[in-house]
Length: 122
Image (cartoon, rainbow, N blue to C red; front, side, top):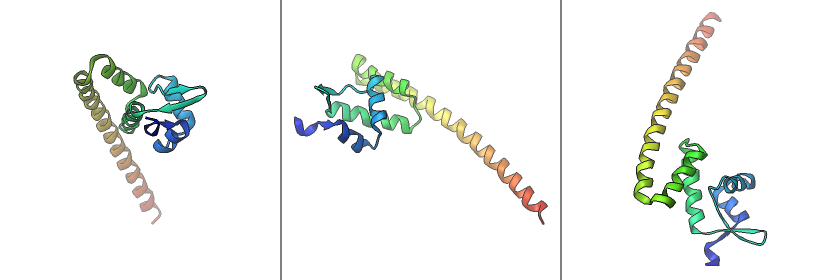
C-alpha cells in the first residue's frame, strides 16, 4: 500500500497546489491524511477527494458547498450525492450564465466608449 500513498510534498506537486492550500483543505476537513509522527500521507481516497475539490473549485463552487457535497457521500451514499450534485450544478450554471451576461454587457459598453473615443480623435 505504501506505493499508493503520497507524501505532503508529493501531493502538492501532483495537484499543483501550495502547501498552505493543502493545509487549509485539511483544516476545514476536506482532506484527512494518515499521520505518522509529523508526516502526512494521502491514499487513494484523499487523491479522489482532491480531484473532486479542484474540479469543484474550477466550476466556481464554494469550499463549503464542496465540503457538504463530500459529506453526503459519507453519510448517505452515492445516489444522494449525485442528486445533490445535479442541484449544485444547476444552480452554478445559472450563476455562470448571469456572470456571462454581465460580462457581455460590460464588454459592449467598453467597446462603445473605446469606439467613441477613437472617433473623437479623428
